[in-house]
Amino acid sequence: MTSVNATTPAALDTVRLELGARSYDILVGDGVLADAGERIAAITRGRAPIVVTDANVAPLHLDTLNAAMLEAGIAPQPAIVLPAGEKTKDFAHFQQLMDDILGRGIERSTVLLALGGGVIGDITGFAAASALRGIDFIQVPTTLLSQVDSSVGGKTGINSRHGKNLIGAFHQPRLVIADTATLDTLPRREVLAGYAEVVKYGLIRQPDFFAWLERNGRRVVDGDSDARRHAVTVSCRAKADIVGVDERESGDRALLNLGHTFGHALEAATGFGQTLLHGEGVAIGMVLAFDLSVRLGLCPADDARRARAHLADVGLPVRPADIPGVAWDVDGLVRSMAKDKKVQDGRITFILADRIGNAFTRRDVDAAAVRAVLDESVQPA
Ligand SMILES: NC(=O)c1ccc[n+]([C@@H]2O[C@H](COP(=O)([O-])OP(=O)(O)OC[C@H]3O[C@@H](n4cnc5c(N)ncnc54)[C@H](O)[C@@H]3O)[C@@H](O)[C@H]2O)c1
Ligand SMILES: O=C(O)C(=O)C[C@@H](O)[C@H](O)[C@H](O)COP(=O)(O)O
Ligand SMILES: [Zn+2]
Image 1 (cartoon, helix red, strand yellow):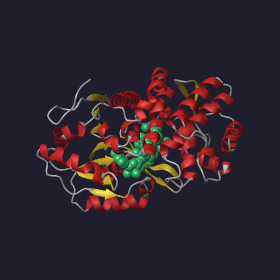
Image 2 (spheres, protein in one colour):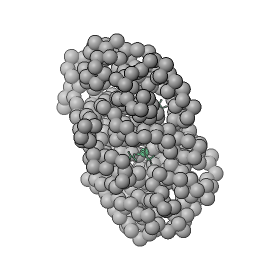
Image 3 (cartoon, rainbow, N blue to C red):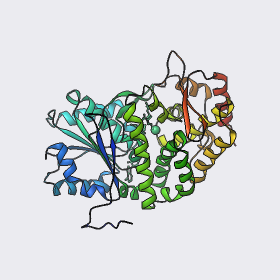
Image 4 (cartoon, rainbow, N blue to C red):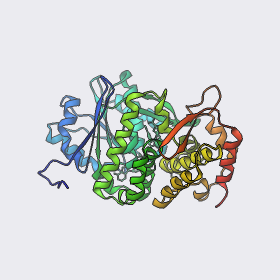
């Protein structure tokens, strides 16, 4: 095992996302942020990036970032600090953020740096895609979800009253710095929400990884440093492999949406807040996708049971009925799913699976089967 101290560089895994001129590195490891100043300076040409973060993350991790930049000769400028949480990913906060960024007198060479979870990464990435028609940005993800998923692949955007992530752009970061030590301060509920996206990679393409998670998932969510780093690195590699061949989701990238057609509808129904976190919606949505696959005769019931059992075992919700205090409206959920970005010719595209580790897309899904799965899932167990 590599030991890490103040004078030894942190143990580092580097995952490369290959996209021609837009390729970039994803640095993963415990303590990598403290050593990342030179990598940041290489992108900003020694100038200070505009750091965008949130009110929870700033007091916890901004000092480490600023110290790393100072060590590389960058004099940090004051960060833009947004309110924490999903409600920040809206038009009003985007407008305010753009005003603040433009108010700093930016040039095309100005670089934004997102320090925080997926909310900060998505809105900052969209600001980078929009400012002066596109400037560079760096992702420094500080949640498990953002380290394994949202910081990689260039999907940026905000929510609208019509649904989740309906406004946005594909805009790749120049560098991702996933310091797994930042996860030490993350509340357990948020760790679990991110873990759902880790499980997703096993379910869509990597049965061996899913089996590893069945054995080691508890170590990951309990913060074991080696297990956590392995899970983040494998996840980033899995995502980089998919995005590298299908950046704009015309094919295999849609697999990364396993559970999201259901999940996004559940999130919209609960108002994009603390009632249901994105990763919790994804956990429930993946179980519903497996249930639907079983109902359509595509997948053995045992595989669906195994997926559900693992998610429940670590402590994730697996049915809408597990979320307290919500009166679910199945018609409303179906209407919301019809606004999904994967709808084509009026038909919802579902990500289904014929076993653990083999997901695929289907457009010809019987609406009655979808409704039956939802009806059953909203009943108390
Ligand atoms: N772009 C993509 O490809 C992609 C992929 C998956 C999810 N997403 C989006 O990501 C968002 C969810 O991201 P998230 O789960 O990171 O949520 P988040 O950004 O809201 O972070 C979760 C909470 O943790 C706090 N936090 C962040 N880092 C912390 C730390 N190290 N210590 C303590 N608290 C910390 C935040 O302040 C927030 O309260 C959703 O909007 C989802 O749609 C995007
Ligand atoms: O990167 C992707 O592609 C994904 O689908 C990753 C998802 O986990 C993520 O939640 C994404 O934002 C969903 O994309 P959307 O296009 O359905 O909004
Ligand atoms: Zn997601």
